[in-house]
Length: 275
Image 1 (cartoon, rainbow, N blue to C red):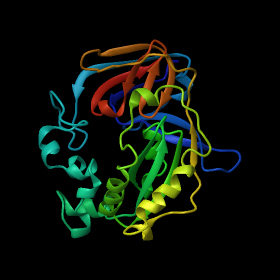
Image 2 (image 1 turned 180 degrees about the vertical axis):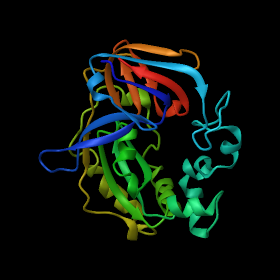
Image 3 (image 1 turned 30 degrees about the horizontal axis):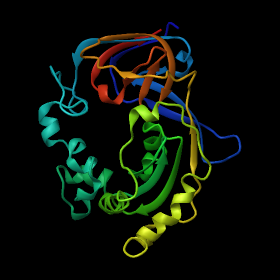
């Protein structure tokens, strides 16, 4: 491979090759984008891929050069003030967009005063999560889900967060990245079997938002093989990773020797990428 890409990392772009049966989901294809450059990643699976950090970093919100990041690719002022870094990103039940409030009310109206989906996903275990309708199925792919099932639809983020809080009594709300990077296969009934429990939980106060007839989405990923043991790589400590790319799943590049790079966690790192 001779294709290369240079510039600040952003999370991997993900597209779907539709399932030939017409069922929701399909095969995931990945690419990286920097400015006008786009590098398709699936041709690298089973071949050499090199990621080298140049040492430069730029804030993913304001674009200023920084010596270190706060949160996921933010300079300190943006971490403190930008709506992209507000607490309701992680805890949607705290969102105030429906009240016309937030760090940036205009941003909140555009991103959070919108239809949201509460879902169950399967990554080796069943978890509950929340995403904007416009982020379906991207959010599920970013989490490495092999299956996902919408279970509620709400008109804004805070309501979806309240449903998630109620369901966290039964389901996890975090993805174990190591478990997700083990071989995980879709189990046809694993999410559908949980739907009656969800509907009972929502019946009294949130039943109006429940979805009773959705079909699970199923995803396959570009995987040559998954190493039996994996170790996370930090580009601050290990500026270059090179070797045979064994798989791509979620937001992880996975090398054959077990090293893995969470691309999203390195947003704003300037890198050179190629074969």
